[in-house]
Length: 416
Image (tube, rainbow, N blue to C red; front, side):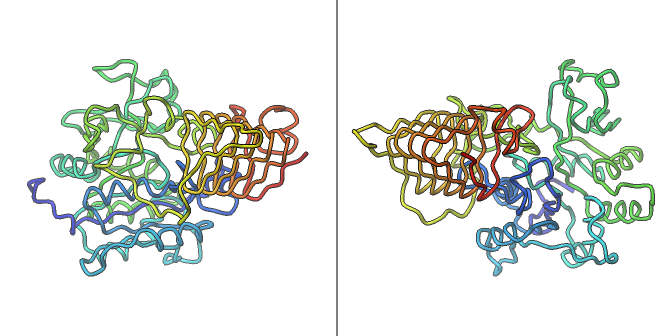
């Protein structure tokens, strides 16, 4: 088949959104990881959905499982496509079609939802993760897949070889086929790329399958009692062994509006990577640019007034630098640097907010200090209180990440 003849209406997309997100606690105490807010007014799920929608692939099912209410609501309220044209984004909860049990893994999630493939009868199936920050033109990945003739194509991103124990590592072979796939190998067991010995190709957790091959491999895997029923851990190695897996180098992807920009991909699986990804947004030359109008990230915004900066008492000026502010934010004579303020946040007179992420409706009272923190929705920092200043004291009351980021859960009270 000529890649140009691939019909988007013959492509189904599955977005895997069923993980518990334990490493993002306490942000995932009462919400699924893909529903975690990001970048002021987005949710993590908006990034893969926007990539697929911008690419023209608009038959999308989101496979959900744990704590999915806010995620289901966001999808229902935000991602409404034209049913007249047969387009949709819909959440599919665990239906226990294989018996009274949850999904055993990502491969089992697909196996338990094979009825969707039977109903839709696609030629190809995208399987994307729901919690990564990036832009990709999936049309180019599909073209590569069709040309390869393989059962599956894995998107790979170049990472430093010293980080290989954090990823599934791909060794490319002839004609873009995957010669070897290793799950989080030690550095001594990995070889760098021929054109970049200090780099390796890591799996991004994004795949495109030929539909018939996907159905066959998940059925085969379902019969294996010793399998973890995981796409990266089981399906991909099995297809590599059959010589039927291809790799797509993410650095070859050209997204409209980003032709001269470096490729960016972040798995925000921990509090530290979540915080770091936010800091990437506010750099002078941001590693990830939210302002690309040719490939927008879509979401549903709250109906709030524009953000504003006003004088505090005694004409104290509001000072905001290197920061993002959502709708409804009011900084009244406060100081904000290197931070992301979500809709409805209020920073009062004399307050200091530095290198922090404040989610919806957080209130930082007069003279309070917040440094290196992530505050979930509705947290109120009272007048004169501090967070991120006395780390030993904070550790007794709040969650502290490996890198020292202080995290407060939704509605959590600040201890004075």
